[in-house]
Length: 103
Image (tube, rainbow, N blue to C red; front, side):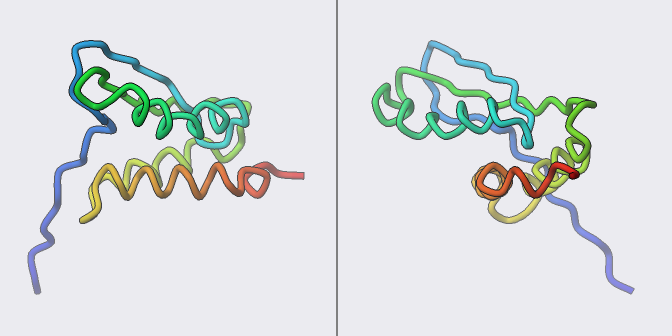
C-alpha cells in the first residue's frame, strides 16, 4: 500500500501589486464568465507589479451545479498545475456554461 501524498491548494491570486482587485465568481454564472474573460487583458494592461487580482469562488444555490463546479476548480488547485490548472478549468466551464444548467 502506498501513501497518498497531497499537495496544498494554490490560492487563486495573480500579480503582486499594491492595489488589490478581489472578485467573487460563480463558475456557471454568465455574468461571472463575462468578468473572467476580461482578467487576462486587465493584468496585461495594468501589469503584475501594479495590481493583485484575487479570485474567490462563491457557489450560488440558484445555479444547480454550482457546488460541484466550485469543488472541481478547487480540486484543480491541488494538482501539479495549481492555480493555472484551476484557471483552465474555470475557462472550460465558462466556455460550456450552458451544459451546466439543467433544462
